[in-house]
Amino acid sequence: MATITKKELVNGIAEKTGQTKVVTKEIIQMFLDEIINELGRGNRLEFREFGVFEIKERAARKAQNPRTLEKVDVPAKRVVKFKVGRLMKERVCVDDETPMPEPSPLERGA
Image (cartoon, rainbow, N blue to C red; front, side, top):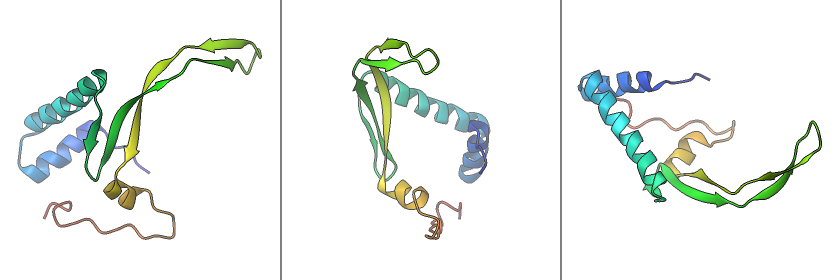
């Protein structure tokens, strides 16, 4: 399994769209910044077929330090949750027996 960086995504998208890497990087960064801004405002983001980003509140709780066994208070906090959409689930969340579906011509860059 490989780790794909933003730079590699930018290169691939720039190549498929014919845009420059600079323009592509700016658009991707604006997109990511907007996701962060909207989540920061408490909004839910829904991308059909891809998934849903939303903020959930975690209640305060008591926990235990595994080394010292000391009880500690863990404060309430907001966390980002992501729920996988249908298309991503079909492409990514498959068992080892199920073959991966072939990408569409658009996804192949044809």
